[in-house]
Amino acid sequence: MRQLLGPLLREPLVHFLIAGLAVFWAMSGRPADPADRRIVVDEPVVAALAERWTATYHAPPEADELDGLIRDYVRDQVYYREALRLGLDKDDEVVLRRMRNKMEALATSEAEAATPSDAQLQALIDRDSARYAGEAHYTFDQVYLGADTPANRALARAALTRGGTLAAPVPAAPLPARFADSGAAALGETFGDGFAAALAKLPLGQWSGPVASGLGLHLIRLIAVRSPGPVRLAEVHQRAENDWRAAAAASAREAQYRRVRAGYDIVIARPR
Image (cartoon, rainbow, N blue to C red; front, side):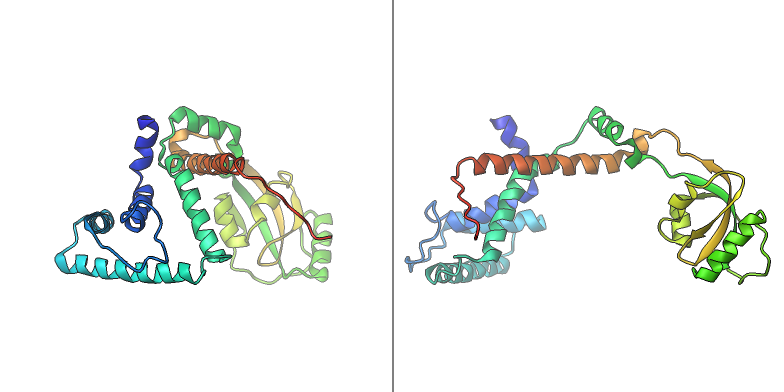
């Protein structure tokens, strides 16, 4: 049990949650009774306040800072008990959501703090290698036709029947006639999303189109495609680790929910 709880208790988020709970329950070991009009700020409460400050600012509070923490604690207790006395916690979606978030934070903190092995990361990459693969690079010639209009689409079709030769001049565009070994991301910045994906579907060595971009229509002659090499763990390690940790946290959150839910009798009555 100590081996399981050790990493969890070292998590800053869990530490803050426990310290916060200690502040509210330190007086009696149970939630404050709204009917109790006596608020005691004893040594355990003050110690919990100071500990939470130290964990946040990495230094113990000065005397005036501790006085301020105590004043805030008393104010919190007054409002907290009055809110409970008035029933303001009942059917409050904000309160409900905060409690759910705290439960989920406790469930996922250990998974988020875990460090995956290289073997685990490699297995993750192998399951979805396309996600981690580098981008393809394209070399192509292009002729800009202007805005995406029916007339310009007809112009493109006519040009293709002549092997990419235009019958009339077209509007000038601030684009080179040839793009050499350009990556998909860079092409997306120039031509807009989806342009590189359109290039990937074109045949090599012949004029094709019209291909639409954020600028308008283009005739394209795809000359070469350089595919990305095999994925190397060292190159995508941080990204894969982030994905692994997110998946582990989601799994832990769902497992906790299923365990807790199993203790409840759920009755759902849908309106007819």
